[in-house]
Length: 578
Ligand SMILES: *Cc1c(COP(=O)(O)O)cnc(C)c1O
Ligand code: SF4
Image (cartoon, rainbow, N blue to C red; front, side, top):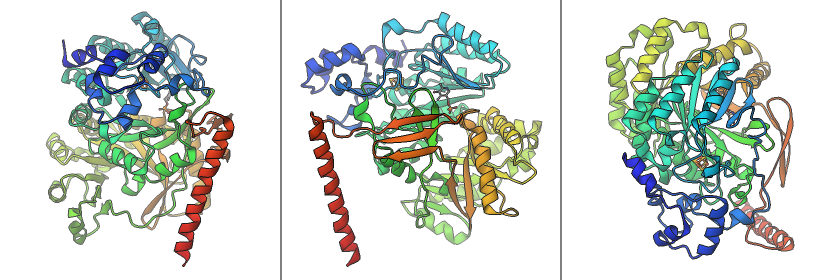
């Protein structure tokens, strides 16, 4: 039996076993919670716990709040309602979500699919998956299939290969995505054999789910590197969770940590309104502050989209903070001259943006020698202009400088010919990470059809679109901004989220991100949003003080808390003013 199966077999799945392994006094309570929502923690993940109520504990140990929660909805995203065949959700025009397993290596207490994961009566059999695949075959508009669950990678290799093979027989399926948490919760599952299987069916994207930097162990980093080395674009999705990762520093450490293994941040989710998870929810305002602190665009690296998945099935709605300009970010060094090289030895440096293109291997190695940890970023023109220069040897040399993100700069799909495709495939198969930045020119590519064609082409080549910006000449800023917003709006919802770049405005070499506004209204207890199709949805804010019983108590406590904060702010203001 492979190591991962052994680990799974020894998982903690009942309250007696849990009590034997850790100090839970509320055994009876836990038993009741588990009766409703199953428990499963494999030994690898369990061993990451350091103490009671730490960020790992809170994600995996059952809590009485799960069954006392009076808020929340059983199926907040209406996945069952938007389901033409069991286990398949077809919400957006061009893509479907196909659930192929209902098991996980650990049952997250905050899971959106709490209603079904781990329930043996809701297990997914091959027949059901086949019906889902039949549906996809009959629907020619589906170009992107997201495999999820439970965890698709808890299936046996043969089954995974079978599903990928069947999907690849369907001509209109362009990209396949696997949403999995095993690199985080059971990294032993990522084996060379599995990577080899996945890489036979490219383009396959993998989305992983890490919530805390403490989940980045030697084992999990190794699993992520194996996936990246197999030429798979690997993105991460995080859920913001109270008392787990609702903290600026924690989220920054997590994001940089992932990028150092070659993983780009994809989505950061506001927690859903799932019944039994209310105690995990954060306030939207606090979430936005955390997002505002993750300024990846300043480093020419992919910026995650912060998403509220609209309750009631409206789909994913992005919220963009007001990214105000900050003082110079010490974590990022842009090499403009030889003097900048001196800065590289500074321990705080996380990202180095090189001036050289990918053919200047000597320079790249020289920079790498001065700082072994930082993420190198190269903005490359060679890939679009002289792809014939890219050789197998050069790819191997480049790979030695990991962590490395290479940005291509394609503006139109017809810039990509057979030579370009071959060069890109070679780079990907050598485990290089490729993202794309597009410049929009009037009359050339300022058109939704042209942009969408390019984005789809990039995904087929396993390149993650990062940014679009308008060219710096010509029209007024206002016109350009309006046009770019229109372009982004024409993508969001209508095509893979992967295909939606951020819109960057450049000003004196500084990048800032703006985006279409989907927020209609916001007050202290709810936010009103508009989805991509123009429908209106409401996301209620959490009521934070859970420990209080009566309503009156609750109001009093939060009121007194607010007074306390206001008083503190006044005090600071006074100090500042004097
Ligand atoms: C999240 C999701 C997808 C994929 O969305 P992207 O924004 O393309 O990543 C597809 N279908 C459903 C039902 C989803 O919830
Ligand atoms: S791994 Fe995903 S599907 Fe499984 S319990 Fe966790 S959040 Fe839910």
